[in-house]
Length: 254
Image (cartoon, rainbow, N blue to C red; front, side):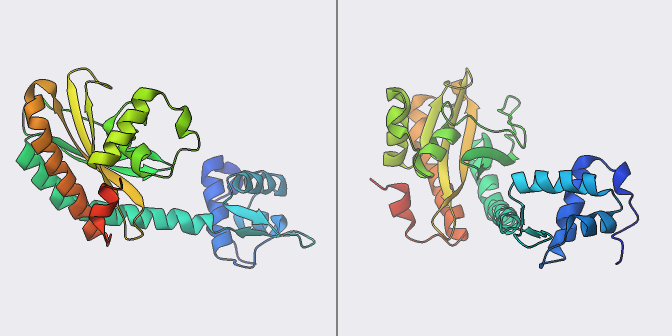
């Protein structure tokens, strides 16, 4: 039985070894036993067993009922790959829209991917102005305190206990559904205004959100509606590029 690479499993960090176990099992659709995993990856059986248990707990592999049991990769690996591909398409479709929106608004534009119902910053186009709003790539916007979060709540899967949300948050969710976008004026960060709108894929599922954020003194109330229109039209354009149909019905479900 051939060894997989020249790495001694006993000397590798546990995270690296877990990935190696997963990569190995992908090559064996019929599965492998613990002793076979250990032999392939040059580690002892106890270490291989610990790693397999960790991957089972995360639902990336499962154990067969055969004797001796074998470990096989689950469909969650495919789901992970599909989410990554979806995100790549999201970035590709969004970039020209984000550049135009930044130039038209003069403010910073952010793109969120919705991961486990949370908006995660995956792209940004910074304002050319000296003072601008900056969110780091990988940051997560709080769902209950930001325009990005309100969009995730309003257009994502229904909250199991939405009726238990406080009145203010329920009103913000309902307003976002009615208008097709959400506005955060100094709720999460003092002196900052954010406007966000949802992005849908060809399955008509929420996959992201597009937002503009700027200092509140540069975005007075009179400018909010024109700015929101720019964001909304940009989000619709991205959704259309991702193959979403009947777009207007998604943005105004009420």
